[in-house]
Amino acid sequence: MACSGADDEAMQMCLSMLMEEAGTDNKDDALTTLLKIMCNIQHNPADEKYRKIRKENKSFHSKVWRWESAQHFLYAVGWIDVDDSIVLTEVDNIPTAISLLEQTLSECSKDTDFVKQDVQVVQIKADRKNVSSREIKASRARDMKFGSNIKKFGDIGIDLNSGGG
Image (cartoon, rainbow, N blue to C red; front, side):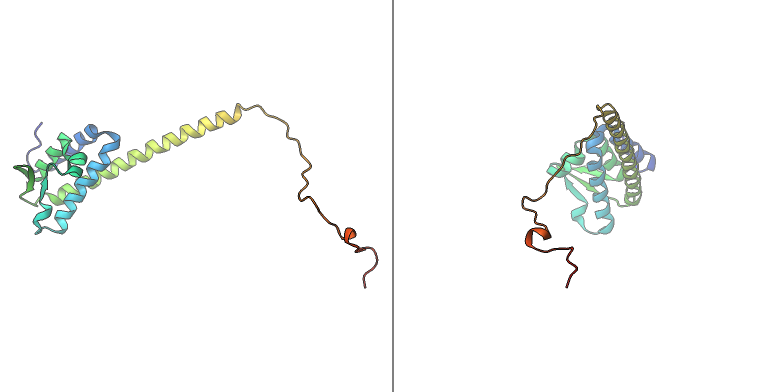
C-alpha cells in the first residue's frame, strides 16, 4: 500500500483512499489543510518554514497526519521523515498535487450538495404528508374590536350632514 513515487496515479490513489478513510466530516478539513500547505509552498518556494512541519503540531496532526492515506499522499508528493517532522525536499510535484487536491475538493463539494439536496427533498415530502394528514376545520371569523375608546365625529360634536361652512 505504499504510495511512494511522484506520479499522478499514486497521489490520486492516496487521495481516493483518504476520501474513504476520513469519512464525511473529516475529509474537507484534511483536503483543505493539505491544499493550504501546498499553496503556501508554491507561493513561497524559498521560505523554509513552509517546507517543514512538526508531526506533533496539534492542528496538523488532528486534520491530516492521523490519516494513513494522507501520510502516503505527502510521501508521494516528496515529503520525507526527519526526526519528529516531515520535510519537503523537492517542489516539482507541488503543482500536480494542488490540481489533484482542487479537483478532489470540487468533487467532494458536489457530493455534499447532492446529499443536502436529497435531504431537502425528503423533508419537503414529509412536510407535505404532514399537512395533508391534518384534520381540516372550518374557520370562524371573530369580531375583533381594536382600541377600547374609538371616537367618531358625531361623538365630538361634528355633524357631517350639515352642509359645511
